[in-house]
Amino acid sequence: MKSEWLWALIAYGVSLSTIPHLLLLKKRPVSTLAWLWAIILFPYVGALFYLLMGTDRMKRKRLKRREAFRAHRSLKGARDPRGIVPSLQERDQLFLETLAHVNQLPNSVANSVNVLVDACHFYPALEEAIKKAKHFIHMQFYIWRDDEAGKRFLNLAVDAARRGVEVRILLDEMGCWEISQKFYRPLIEAGGHFSWFQSFNIWRNRFFLNFRNHRKLQIIDGEVAFVGGMNLGEEYEGGDETLGYWRDVQIQLSGPVVHVLEDSFANDWYFATDERLTESKKIERDEECYPVQVLAGGPDLNCDPLQRSLVAMLNHARERFWITCGYFVPSETLLTALAICASRGVDVRLLIAEKVDHPYLVQVSRSFYEDLLHVGVRLFEYSCGMNHSKVTIIDQDWLMVGSANLDNRSMRLNFELNVLIRSQEQNQYLSDILEKDFEKSKEIKLSIFQKRSFKQKLVEAAFRPLAPLL
Image 1 (cartoon, helix red, strand yellow):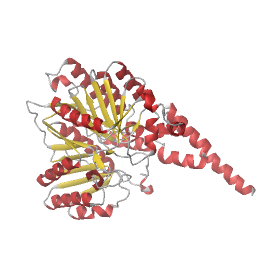
Image 2 (cartoon, rainbow, N blue to C red):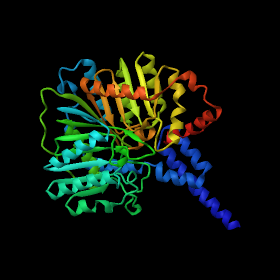
Image 3 (tube, rainbow, N blue to C red):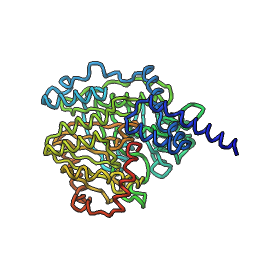
Image 4 (cartoon, rainbow, N blue to C red):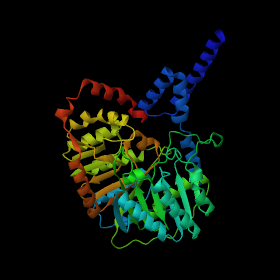
């Protein structure tokens, strides 16, 4: 009996020994406090989860590799937006310059911009691009299902490899936990390349549950790129009866910005495989082009570029700021920025998914509603199916599409990729779609929301402290 107590005390001491490591990481106070309580109250489980999900080993490893390979070749001297589109107003020029410094990525331009709403438009466009590929295909997804949709695109990739195209597929193993690497054996046998961004192989020191590559990026021949929120699976085509219709958005770009996106893939591919990719031929800009800023976030960055970029966008908005997201678990910084924007008289609207693959997140989201409703932010819950799109509309000119949700995971833990574009035409196109989505959704009214049951309020309050960890 004494020996059992002795071992228990030793185990407890080992658990508590993780606390100095936690404090020295200098995380945000709210995150530090949350992990501290987890370790003290649940010493064995809490410490184990901290070691798996709360440390910064990924950050340190990623930074070392970045020093060895800097793929952002076009960054030098490319941050001044006056050299990108001289006709831009000074206010927009300063806006782009700010975002370039925040994201440490160059301003660029797109020769063409094509917004692809839902899989019925994205899948055919990607399929056509793959079939036309002559030199290389780089595809990065968070999820690739072993279903009809996944098999269809695997076969397209295999066919391309057989005709001599360099094919590389990079996936997140956490997102693809239902599928094994054997699924991609036909591609490898055809001469293609496949890699997990990180694996669960303990012996390779790559057991990182918390840091996931959530980016969705596809580049064909260095001439066309697709960026957005869509993965490959039948549910994106509405094939999941539980979730029903699936709303999502991808954007197709051509022109010089493709090379900035190539650098993003090259960095991730090097981290995963140690292979350095060569830069493809530069694309000349058209006379009529669209200013673009690429926004890439990840746990290897200390400045939280996505969150800071969103604050800059909210400050820039004068007329409207509409945003859709699958998950809404905002930080205090974003809550304050949204409130200030609405207080200036800007039409601030949030379209939030009512159906999600993690139902408890809905309760966490609702715990923030009253804070925003009190200052005039309009909130809508999309219940016609699964709203997985990540779209932002700023005034009449700017739009942003990408992979990042409004939650702590996207802002700080996941590797995310968004693009911000100045295009009145595409802004209007997406605005019309969002208007229809608002009409289909349930608007949350403050007077009605305040009358929800005590039980519902208690559930929301119980889940809200988990927000810093989500």
